[in-house]
Length: 309
Image (cartoon, rainbow, N blue to C red; front, side, top):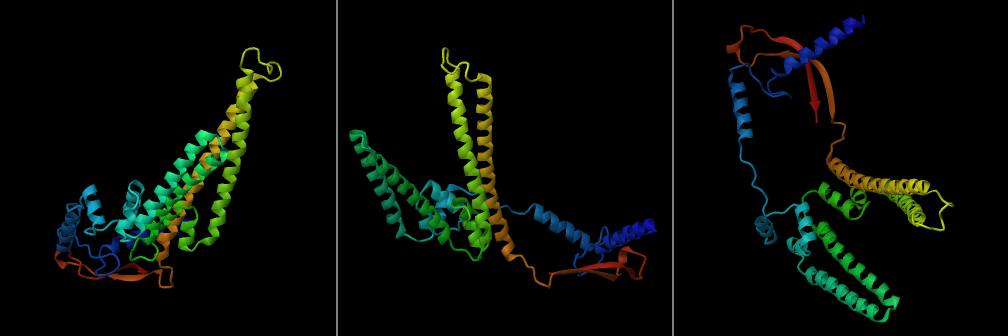
């Protein structure tokens, strides 16, 4: 009985496969017998697709033409260009008034940070060092804000752009999930970052501790000789360094998953999940497409698969 069921299943699959090439105007398209007009047209179309013109390689000249408004620019290329040349994203988005804000902010933070660095070197006052670090961080944040502003202001006909979601999550983890409406995933990713950060910090502390002990115990005449075994210290030093590196790698994996998740679910925003999506099997009548290449003029019966989308 089991063998009969398997045989019937294989036969049904063969009938379905053989019938898909003969349905005209159906789901599978028109495919004729060897030498028929339909097959020749199909081969011609395939050759045209293979030998068709390919888009030219993207050049730096085309990039600057896009900035001048003579060509289009993808959001990824615009983002990459704004990393190398800050402000180019604002030029492409025609937000010219933001350029003096961007460059003025970066220049002001860098200049005042440089002045505080000189005062710290002259006086040794740590307050100037703290101010210097904060001002340099302000310059970095302004630079980052200019890039982010370009991604936010990029105009596209799609409401949810997958590339924008990826760039959001790359520049600020979790922002891509907020962009696609998956807010519940944000604490999951940040929980992963916090966990990885904790293990990076703790393993690095232990690594530094055993590294210092190992270096001290390895010196001739060290006071630690006899109190600690050098081989044991080396084992713990290498182990905690390896654990720290694994923790860093885990953090990078969480960061990559954050970007991939934003991109995938941005693509799925346009995926149709309505009730109109269905597949059904039923009996079908197979008619020859070209009577010139067959002696059988009678219709054949088989299985037909219908896809509704």
